[in-house]
Amino acid sequence: MFPEHFTFHVAEQVNNFVDWLLDSYAPLFDAISTGILTMLLRINEILLMVPWWLYMIIVFVVLFATTKKLIASLTLAILPMLIGAFELWALAMESLAVVLTAVIISLLIGIPMGILMAEINSFAVVIRPILDGMQTMPSFVYLIPAMMLFGLGKVPAVLATLIYSLPPVIRLTNMGLRHVPKNIEEAALAYGATKWQLLKEVRIPLAMPSILTGVNQTTMMALAMVVVASMIGARGLGQEVLLSINRIDIGRGFEAGLSVVVMAIVIDRVTQSIAKKWEPPR
Amino acid sequence: MSGIKSINAISPVVEVKNLWKVFPKRQRSKGKKTLNIDVHDEVTISQMEKDGKVVVAVRDVSFEIYPGEIFIVMGLSGSGKSTLIRCLMRLIEVTAGTIKINDLDITSLSKKELVKHRRYQAAMVFQHYGLLPHKTVLDNVAFGLKLRGEPKEERYRKAKAAIERVGLKGWENYYPAALSGGMQQRVGIARALVMDAPVFLMDEPFSGLDPLISRQLQDELLRLQEEMKKSIMFVTHDLSEALRLGDRMAIMRKGSIVQIGTPDEIVSNPADDYVAAFVADERRTLEKTKLSLGNKLASTPASS
Ligand SMILES: Nc1ncnc2c1ncn2[C@@H]1O[C@H](COP(=O)(O)OP(=O)(O)O)[C@@H](O)[C@H]1O
Ligand SMILES: [Mg+2]
Image 1 (tube, helix red, strand yellow):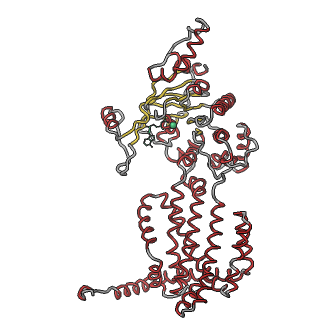
Image 2 (cartoon, rainbow over the protein chains, first blue to last red; image 1 turned 45 degrees about the horizontal axis):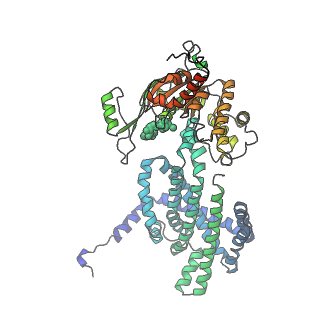
Image 3 (tube, rainbow over the protein chains, first blue to last red; image 1 turned 90 degrees about the vertical axis):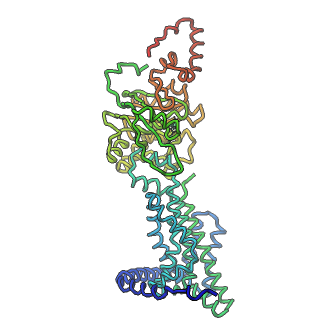
């Protein structure tokens, strides 16, 4: 097939490098690991503490307050009952906890990076091709570096999810800020706005719809990734899907799959309706 | 009119001397952005202009604005009016020349001093309003005061008073999008009024409005000016507006000022064909009046 004397392997070198990295920066990796794990467990705890019916009330109130559509809000609020009926509630919360942890960290990193990209052109020039590259890579690829550094378990799952879901919020924060009308910026400057005031009073508020669209997309990507990340220990609904694939248990896979879809729809609607609320009044 | 009164006795509020603004032509390739041009080297400049490398938007412009007068800058679109008025706020960096406002040279201010200048010395009204769509009328008007760091109660008190002065009482909590063009520009004027700055810069503030509304706002401006006596630089391309509002006016053409004078002087004694074409309609009505009034008006003083 392929001439034998052309083949070579880097697997050993990679392994050695990772070992060296883990050895030399052990405290750093430990700190990251403990940080993420503590946050994840705390979030999971809170999610399980909230009774199931309260989720439905929250979803209904948020949707109805923002969209004023009674039937749609009601339907979307009742839909999650399906997950409970399939006895997958706890697993769903486990997945949701990974998603929330990853999204929160994504936003903490992504929004400031988007702002920097909009403010500093040379930074944007460096970051843009990286983001493009990240978005063309299949989600599976992100499992490898996360696993290399943190092994198997929840922490690498959060990490892979967060890296995979990072690009949209960076991109849309940057885009929103760049599309703020120049004449409005000019007026603010003419009244003596400093660079910081311009950002805080004008640019960020006007970019908010775009930023929130980024939040929505990032959340949806995280949700997609959390299923894949069950391969390296995210557990939750993804693991249920994975197990039923391995056992060719179609029925069980269907229930888990449907639960993921329900979660995706509800989360998508809720974040989108919040984003709409932020659009400037007209 | 009032502009002629003892000009030499009062020192000007705004003093612009030999101002140049040369733009590099907008190019695809982001090459050298900074443009080093010696404006006194006329040959090089006109050559670069011919080659299409640069646009001279403001060319060796000098004028003064005296306290309490409305100074009109008039010219066709593209003659450099907006560039000129933006230079006074240093929203555009000038290429050469000096701009003094209350004896302070704007062109040499540091960043910090510039912010202070914009907050206290001059207030600007824009053609496209430039209101903040995410803030209410009240917050829009109070915006400049917020930037200054004035306490909330005080800036709302002042803003409410300004809103009342422009006749928008009751609209404080609406967003700009809910207002008509004329009302939005009233908000723009209130936002400038509230700053209580000595200089007012207005770049075609009423051009986008229909004639009736525009006329109303001109009257309103005159009424307000009666009370506040600001030094106003008012850019327009509409002669009738210029004649109604102006104490003195400057006519711009391709970046240069071709004539400065009172509206009477300019109408009766245009410096060249360009100005004559501008004021042709007005001259015709003037001729008619002259004819109908016999020789009564024929002896209008024609000093320039
Ligand atoms: N940022 C810019 N870069 C390059 N050319 C410009 C820029 N701004 C204005 N100009 C040019 O300067 C000239 C004067 O424009 P402007 O001051 O807007 O005229 P006006 O307000 O009288 O219509 C025009 O030819 C315009 O194309
Ligand atoms: Mg203009």
